[in-house]
Every structure is written in C-alpha cells, then in structure tokens.
Length: 545
Image (cartoon, rainbow, N blue to C red):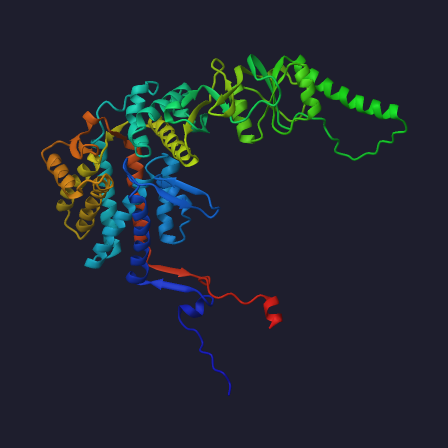
C-alpha cells in the first residue's frame, strides 16, 4: 500500500516546515501584552528609594545584586520579541539620559495592562493607539506647564544647585546615603566641567573601587587613580614630565629571523654587551629628553628596568589600552609606539605621581591640577564587591544626571507629585473627548497612579490611602504635594527638596508610550524557524546502533 502524505495548504504551504504562526487578539496581542507585563512586574518592585534589590545571575555565572532596572533588563537576556521592545525602550532611555529606565519599562507595562482591559471590553487596538497618542501629546503639554519657575537658569558649577537636581536620581539607587554620594559626584563633575557645559563628557569622571572601609572613607581625587603599583623602587615624583610607550619598555626583537654564529667566549660577551649598551642608549635618550616618568603599555624588561633605576626614572605599567588613553588625556602626553627618544611636544606633565596604600591595596595616584586637567576619579570604598558595583551604578546615574542638567536644567516636582497632577489633568481631558478613544485616554491617566502606588507599596505604606489623599490635595490646588516616604504622609516637595529633571521625565514617558503603541500594533507573529524541535541524532550515535 502506498503511503499518502497530505499536502500543506494556506500559510503552511508558503513557509518552511516547523514554522509557528500566531494571529488574532487572543493568540498574538494578549500574549504579547502578557510577556511585557511580566517584565514590568520584575522592574516595578525596584522603583524608587525603597525599591527592592534583584539577584540576577547571567550566562557567565556573574552575580548582580542591584535595583538598577537598566542592569536588570540587560542581564536577563529576554527572549520574547514583544518584551524585547520594552527592553529596547529602557536601553534607549539609559543611553539618552542615563537614568529613568525603570520608569520607562514599568510605565509601558502598566499602559499595556490597561490596554488589555480595554481590548477585553471590546475596543480595537487601533482606537487604543489613537487615544494613547493623544494622551502622550497632552502629557507633554502639561509637563511643560509643571516646570518649576526659575529652574531653567542654573549655574552648573554651583554645588548646591547640582545636588538639588541630582539627589532624587542617586537616592533611588542608594537611599539614605544620597547626601554623601551626591557631594562626591557633584565635586567630581564640577572639577572636569568644560567652559561650555554642553560639551561635558561622562567618561571624564572615573570610578575606582577599592575593597574595605565604608562610604564615609570615599573621596574624590583630581586626576587618575590606577589600581596598580609602580614597577621599580621609585614611588613618588613631583612636577615631572611623562613619556608614554604603547609597545612596552624592553629590548626589541627583530621582525626577520637571523642566525648569529659565535666562535669564542669573547664574542659571546661582546654580543651581550652590545645588547646592554643598546638598551642603555635608549633609556638614556628618554632621560635626556627631560622625562622623569615612563609609562609602558606592555611588559617592562628586567634589563630596561635596571637602567631606568640607574637614571632615576619612575616606571608605571598600564595594560588596559583604554586606561592608557585616559592617562594620556590627563597628562597631555602623546602615546609613542616603541621605545625611542621622544620629542619635547610628545611629553606629558603631572603635578605629582605617588603610590599610596588605600585599605591594603596599593594604588598609583596621578594628579594634574594645573594643566587643563580633564579627568577626576571618585574612589569608592565598601565591604563587598556587590556593594561597590551598586555604588558605582549610583555614581554613573549621578554623573549622567549632571550631563542631562547641562543640556536642560529645568525641574519638575518629584515624589510622585508630577504623576498625580498628570493623572488628574488627563482625566479632565478625557471627559472633553467624544470618540471611543476617550476610554484609552482615561486608562492612560490611570496608568500614572502606578508610580505613587508602587512608591508607597515598596515603602510598606497603604497605597490606596496615599493616592486618595494625594488626589484630594491636588484637587484643592496644591500641585506640588508628593509622598514623604519616611513619614508616610503627603507633603509639599519644595519643603522636602525632591525635584526630578524635566528632560528625564519627558523621555521616559515618551519612550514608554511609543513602546506600548508598538506592541499594540502587532496582530500576527510568524516565526519561520523551528521552535526548538527535536534535533536529528548525531552521525556517530546512528553508526553505533
């Protein structure tokens, strides 16, 4: 009897065998929304100063203990294509501003959850998208009106003004330690701020993490801190010129191979002496150029080190090429490819180079206070690697906030005051609309309640009481009333001095709404590759049978 195989038809005849095709509201839209909700649930509990930490172990078995949403979503390696859109929105926020990734992902998740309710009520995703688009445009309008008067004029070199704008960003990572951290970050940023603040480069504020001690032992160094010892015996120099060699300080091997025939012991002795003389000649040439410090990007040979000691040259080894570039930027030196006599223009200058011991670790501190120094280092101290990593992330957020305020220093009330006001104003706006999209606008307004609700829940407060009292205050015209998480009451943010940067809020809400609308626009998912089906057995296994 001949076997009969049924011919595929429809979409199956068009695509490869083993493909998957999901379409319709239940299969595609609701499933996409569900995946995004799961991601938002993970990040939401980390929102705000009382946010909980997540323990994430990535594919390399590296442990992350943090409440920084950007790190969490990066290391989770999200597979679902719809949830990846939220991850991309979070990454876009992180790259644009450097803070507010959690707000982006959590708010997008909330918007999608509310969209699901509307879909179940019978609204079409297109109507929801139209409503959400109108709502985000209105939100941006209202956000402009909420900007604190006078905040657009700011002196970016005034430490107090900088700390006021930076505090909420740092507090969301390290609650209770924000005063000390903000002071360090502001000091480091102001030191390296160029004449035109818009050109501020975040890479000029470095972080050196040293185990031991606590946050109170942390300090700011004007210059570079290298986590290595000097190679020779000279450990301290002041007002010295610097020569940087990328290829290392050693006898150079020729590129072509050759054979040297030696007949007697005298010839062997002379051969060794000529090598010695050549190295001495090179080191002497560097010393004669006026350089007192040699920095090597690779190994330092024994013989070369011996002559460096003889000519009283301090030797540093920096194996990371990125660190070497920063060193050149700090000192104004030009990195030379191989050991040779440097031109006077190629030499850099340092006020002082010294090896110091901080908490048992020997570090080299390179200070350069006069020459247009463009690097400063925050030396962080802490008891474990995880704590130091988290402190570093808080510093990164603070430095990114400084860059953002150099671009646009306007502020809006923090502590969920802005969100409640936006929710109130958008609800009023939705009542004036006549089409079906008014329901979507009302749900968009409701989504803002997620922020005060989450802040209150993470702090162990009664969220419903807090939200209702916030609405009551805002209804009576107190638009700057937010949550005081320490006392569990509603207070005016201008007395608590909690301000958020307008630019952070603007981009976070915009990216969240864009991501939510993109997910809602999808109505079919077609995966053309087999979804992890059984693999054919290996050839060897077949032969054994």
